[in-house]
Length: 83
Image 1 (cartoon, rainbow, N blue to C red):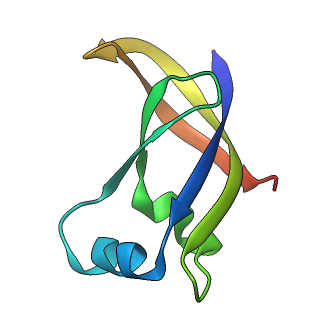
Image 2: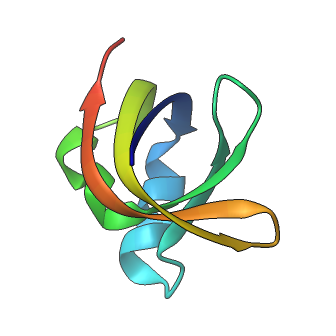
């Protein structure tokens, strides 16, 4: 089943730089409905600007039905900036 969630992402330039240079490849965030979500950093590369990544995003993923620590697992489908 496809699922779409909205979330706000605000990463300063120095935070984005750490994702490029360190082994941390996932960003932890919360959807507008309060669900915890982990995003792979590489899906956000197209949204990096000189001051980091800032905005409201709509993430669509294929829900797998698997859960890890009460967090739904799924396969990334798309992400777009909506504000």
